[in-house]
Image (spheres, rainbow, N blue to C red):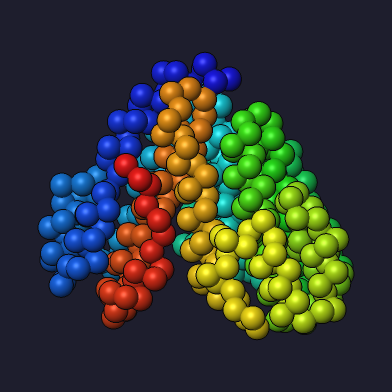
Length: 330
């Protein structure tokens, strides 16, 4: 598998040169108005999206940029499932949105985010019938599970629980099938951090053991039963455990003795994934440089969205800096 990427990775290196630099992001944050923002972005790959009043539909433009990037890469890589490992988050978002729309007879088409693999019509047809000849079997099974659930319960949150559980399971098994230790390490760490956030939120919301068992994934390195043991214990005890865990240095800045800063924890989680994938810069072969680039592009788009929305909403520069994700170290 590693040798099959020897012609792809030089293309990835070229695309890395199109990523925005830290200096460019600094200029964007300091820009006094959107005219200056447009001037800074004009010579970049985002220049084509800078129409009049671009700041009001720039989020849609950013999605278009991601879709175009995914489409170009799907055409050239030996194993497109590597890209789905990254764009699966959009598949799951779309399944949640379209399933809820189907159940409550509303139109949520405008919330659809292209994932580079499955069209809205394909997902809608599978949700309506429980069958599909184009979607992966695992996706169809998750749709069928939701259909079965909804025959017995009308609580919409159950839809999120089922699809989220499928997402983490599929991420783990897909990463394992790629037979790359760094990729598997990144996914397991992501699952661990997702489980930590889920456990903490469940404690704050006083969720039952049964609910927690349904939403905590078994595919992290932290034993699921260990996390479930906190179902009847105070949040402070979970925090004490986390401050002694292997993740203590990573998530410590988001923890105090009595509470967790979830916004900060989310930023730290994204930064950790970037750090793990940073090793890809030293690899000439294998799929890791591609995954690192996908992550870098995603982080770039997240940061651009933050800056545009932040400036539009009157955020201070300090508030924007606090929410910024770590950039790929070019």
